[in-house]
Image 1 (cartoon, rainbow, N blue to C red):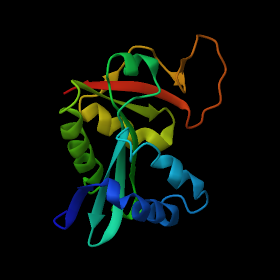
Image 2 (image 1 turned 90 degrees about the vertical axis):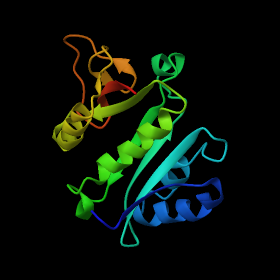
Image 3 (image 1 turned 45 degrees about the horizontal axis):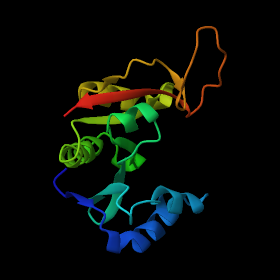
Length: 168
């Protein structure tokens, strides 16, 4: 994609970008846009935006201190949210966003972390992360941060995840 531009959000742009996310990413839940960028001004998170011909095509956020205690103890930043709008998918945008994130993370840590859901909607992400060298952290399937136990019954939703890491 020749006209693709990846840009890191600067603290001075936060108000403008929050408004953009309110309109384009979280129109049904505008408060989520504010939550998404919580901690950015304090250096606790960074976001990259992918622009194609002047349109927002995708985004990726890094949380420098994961809520996962194991990741936090091992200084593993979390790639918290990766999204590419449907009309821009399958054009390499997610890979370009991941490239930018991993380069920035490598300046501060030796590993990157990410989560991936376990139902069909996450199939493309599962394949992308595996191709990029991400491997499960060894705790198995989790409901959020809690590892699941054999025989346990859970709801298959966005909180049913694997925690993955990659050496940088």
